[in-house]
Length: 144
Image (cartoon, rainbow, N blue to C red; front, side, top):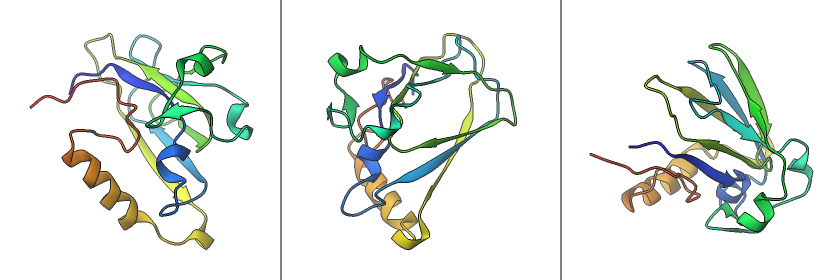
């Protein structure tokens, strides 16, 4: 795929459904350095307590996004970042010739059950339709 980054979204709109967890925590593990030039994660710090913002297919409305302040999350290999499913976030495309590899691990409350298979079943459905994300937040283009 060709990276244009990820459009502004909250992970809760992909997960917080009748079928999946109501809230989860993501752990981002940096494999490579993440810089402004290679499209680091950008977060609207403190906005995770405001519920789900207006969106279409998981992508936050531009009129809402434009009123938020985003902070670049610059990391080095081995760094970890934890964030809540309601935190608005996005990233720009990678404008370098290098990598920006990040691993994401997602955890929900044990009381909500083991939703691993349910999530990946839902993800497989959208991938058949040409998307890499349950939210339609991927700004790039999938290529063969």
